[in-house]
Image 1 (cartoon, rainbow, N blue to C red):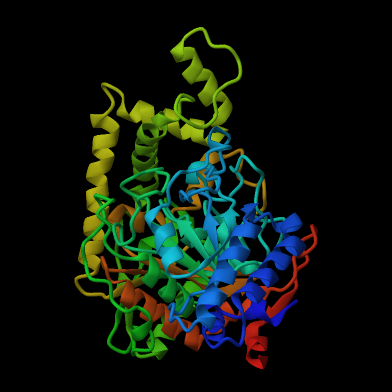
Image 2 (cartoon, rainbow, N blue to C red):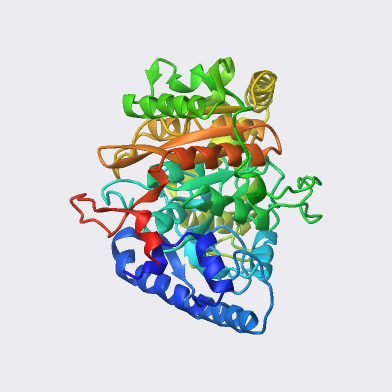
Length: 509
C-alpha cells in the first residue's frame, strides 16, 4: 500500500504545495485503494475517476505556476450523496432520485472547488439520511472496515468507512440526529457537527430542515479544523445561515485547555433504565480523567430532559421530512412509475411506492400523522415545546461549563441485520447524539478507545458557534491519547478478522 494513503490531509497538502507529492499521484493512490477494498466495504455509490484526475491535474498545473491555493488544495475528498453536485448524479441513495443530475452546485461544493479539493465520488448513505447504519441505502449496505460483519453507522456511513479504509483523507457528512458523529464513532474517525447555521445548507437535499447540518469528517482533529474553515461562513442563499465571523480554527488548536470547565452529563449514560455498555462508559470516564490530567476542571452535570429526545426527535424530524419529501412526485424530475396511471393521484402513489424504501415510507407516515388535523397540537406542537426544554437544559449546563463530554453511541458497532427488524432499537442507537441537533450545538466525535478490536467514540459538545473550543479540546485529547492513530490496514475477511496498523509509519516519509 502506498505511503501516501497514510498521510493526513494537512500533511498531504503541505507536500503538494512543496511539490514533493503531486495531487495526481495522491488521487491515483486513492482510486487504486478504492479498487482494492470497495468490493468488501462499499463506501461509494459512484466513483468520479475522470473528474478527480482532471481536478488534480489542474491543481498541479496551478501549483507549478506558483499559485498559493490554500492548505487543502489537491487533497482528495469523498462527498456524501446528498449534496447537489453539478453534472454528477446525486441520488440520496434512493430509487426515486436514481437518475437525478443536479444543474447546480451546493454552496459547500462551490467552496470545496474554490479551495482546490479533488472529488473522488459520492459515498453511500441511508436513504435520504434516514437511518443509523447505512443499511437503508437503495444500493446496498456499507460494511465497517474494522469488521465487515458490522455496520459503519449512519447515515454518513459511507463517508466514515471511506476514511477508515484509507480510501480518502477527507470526507463530507451531514448530521440531522447524529449522522456524522455516530458513524465517526463506529469507524474510529473524527467527525464534527457544526452549530446549526454555521455551514450553508443551500444545495443539501433536505431531510429535516430545522435539524440538518453539513460538517467535516477526517482522520484527526487538525484535518477537521482545516476542512471546517473551507465550509463555514454566511451564505445569503440559505435563510438559516448565520452571519457571524469565522475564526481561524487551526490557529487555536494548540492553545492550552487548563482554563476549561468540562461537564459530564449523567443522563447520557442511561436512557429509561437502559445503560450504555460498560466499554463505552469506561472510555468516556477515562477521557474525562485525561482532561483533568491536562488541567481542565471536570464535574457532573444534569440535562434532565434528555429522556425525551427519542420521542421528540421522531415527531419533529418525520414531520419535517413529510413536508420536504412531498416534492418527489414523478412530475418534474426523478423516478416516475412506468406503469400507466389513471390520474395524477395514482401517478403520485405509484411513483412514491416504487421510489421510496421502507424506512422513508415509515417516517413520511409518522410525520404526516403528527401534522394532521386534530393531532398537530398533541404531537408536533408538544414536541416543539419539549425541544425548548432540552435546549434550556444545555443553556443551564453551559452557565458553569465550557464543554460537555459524553458518549457518542450507547454500544459498540452492531452487526449488519441485527436491528433492521426492530426500528425502535435502531432509533435508540442515536440517543446520545440527537440532543445536540435539538439545541443546534456544535459537537464532535473522536476516537477514545477500543473494545474487542472495535472503536469507541467520545463526544465533545460546545456552546453555540464555539467550534473553536470544541476543536481545541478534541485536539488536546488526541495529543494525549493516540487512539486516532489506529486504522484497519486491509479490508478484513467476511469472518470479521481484523488487521490493524499504527499510523506512526507516516513519519517514515
